[in-house]
Image (cartoon, rainbow, N blue to C red):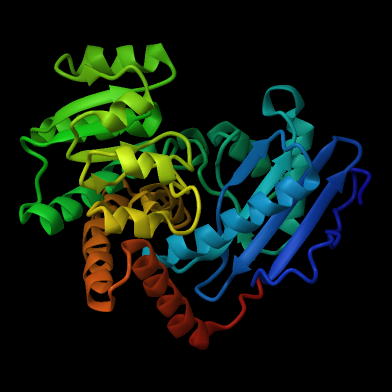
Length: 368
């Protein structure tokens, strides 16, 4: 605990006894600013852990811990398959960002991140934005996802959408023998930052696109840019549409047992994180002949961008790296067929192999 004036000292929390595989979990509290946060480092086998900071009004500290443990593990796998020299980490700040976020709180949080000496590098996530990272960076060197005015790359949605589209091309080639969505009907659920850019790629490729979003203004922005796009009443109507490709680009957990049974698309490839509602949904999709492109494989364009920023951001360099998502997705499908497992399992195996192989050379990252 800290008064908010001294360098904070991370305090251990009650996670010992859980077999999570994490290297480190840090509980952070600053009474003066109201900061309550948890930082989880899953692995530094590939290098310093990298992952965003989520600012969310969790119902309990246990819920926050559960989320940060799952998210940090997911980042380790995502970074591994993206070919980055970064392990997986994540942080959560407990609170309502609309009410509780202040400069003082973010700066206190930045001091906690700094205290880890580079074992964890933070960036934006739900509830945090590039301007927030600029504030955190006033107290911490280990921040990315910053604004262009502060030497950062800014909004990562462009490369996230580009990467998802590369995953779609790999999926189309695997399923239909041609890396194109021309003449195919693609449904995009969620047309905010990432989804609207994905729609542009699909339209340019010649796809027939139908969209939905809980925000009517988001739908109208897409229709203004692309008048030929159709609109579904809601996500349930979209998945029942006669689709070739379904792209979840909003909330996670959208692929559950009920959805799988009514889904018409033969490919699922979207930007949303944690699309599978529970283990086993990936097998249900495979049993129905639906090709699932694992979300953390295809939506890694954003983390590729923020990782590139650490070198001094170069958009074309980052775009070339994000283009490799197509090759990686194809490798996942190939391994899935070779080993007779769903693509989600194959993706996990590829990530685990890279972490194990490179990790033998590097061990635990000690920071700088």
